[in-house]
Amino acid sequence: MPEALGEESRRLTRDQLFTVIATASINFSSMICYSILGPFFPSEAEKKGASNTVVGLIFGCFALINFLSSLILGNYLTRIGANFMFVAGMFVSGCVTILFGMLDKVPSGPMFIGLCFLVRAMDAVGFAAAMTASFSILAKAFPNNIATVLGSLEIFTGLGLVLGPPLGGFLYQSFGYEVPFITLGCVVLVLVPVNMCLLPKYDSIPSKDSFWKLAFLPKVLVLCFTIFSLSACLGFLDPTMSLFILKKFKLPAGYVGLVFLGLALSYSLSSPLLGFLSDKLPYLRKWLLVSGGLTTALCFFMLGPAPVLHIESQLWMFVLVLVLIGFSLGMSAIPVFPEILHYAYENGFEEGLSLLGLVSGLFNAMWSLGAFAGPTLGGFLNEKLGFEWASAIQGGWALLSGLAAGIFYIIEATRTSSSSSLQTSPGDNEERTHLMGSET
Image 1 (cartoon, rainbow, N blue to C red):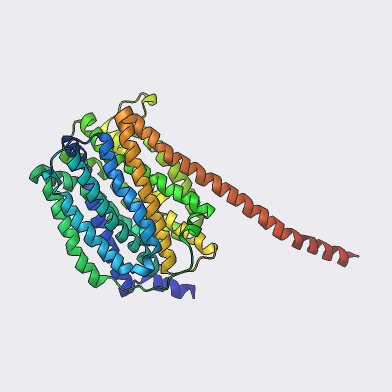
Image 2: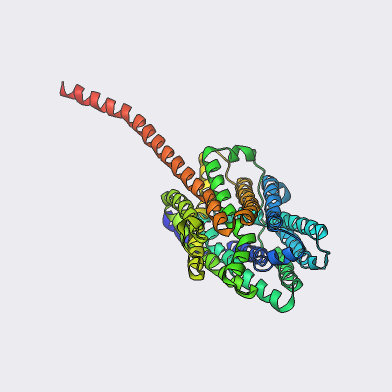
């Protein structure tokens, strides 16, 4: 039986293949649309009268609306339909990406800032719908190796993050503000009918399990904080890193996007291996979560680097630290989804698309909450203290999550060992009594 399952897992069915293609397209297109803002939007927004803090709030607005949308959509996934939610989210994202490219025509000041918030909020709803449905469909299609599949598909997430900044910077430098958004928005809209034809239909029966019942499980709370901290650290870089590179290293906007490659490439290339290890060696997940959080904290302390170190920032060192951040983020982020799913099964949750909707909604919600806190707090700290101190402080989120996960796993191991000793002690007493009786 295990051999038969192993052979089946190595051969993708037609539905599984189409599911991988569809979800890879949403990973790639959503990330490339999201990441094109990094090299030029902060400076463009400053010309329109937006401060660093306001730019951070614009980035954070997307994450906050995404957080609320993921909570709601994850809870109602089976009622709305995973397939409809997937393609509808892509359609909305494509339309509002094009609209974002029209904002340079808006007068500077409050009107520009207000429309930025509105368009980003609409984009967040579409992104939340597509990604929540995507995670659920993937877990339904690949129930036995979800971490491996998620890790492999992070290659396309990484490609989007890799290609977005340099492509956005090049198009902005060559053709102006509108062209990057209009081009990529049209690409997303073309993918909508393609995915409508490719994506298999997955039906499910609504479950009685509560979203809050899942969210308030002790281990899930710790894992949610891990997701939040990683996203906060990553989101901090969006409104701050490009400005720091422009001022510190005097690079043109077209080359700023190339610096982002270190983070995106290391994350996308390491994710398949980390996903494979999470599926094949589940006991390694706890070590990956703890060591990933602590390594991320150390890297953010070195990113500036922190002024207490009295080290002059250099471009090669900055890129090297970004590479390490990409790898450490993957160490913590990839094992979280299967870890939550496994813990939910242990606590009696019903297997099916409904539970997958709850887990994916919770994952996306906590990621979005961190993506709101990171740019918002990061923009404020960057404006008041400078990038060096801001990045060191931001790494505190990852430090706390790594310590919290380590303490929880130590307590869990202690309880497991004590309960197992209590279970074996009566048997040992019976065996001793039996031996003593046989000797007499």
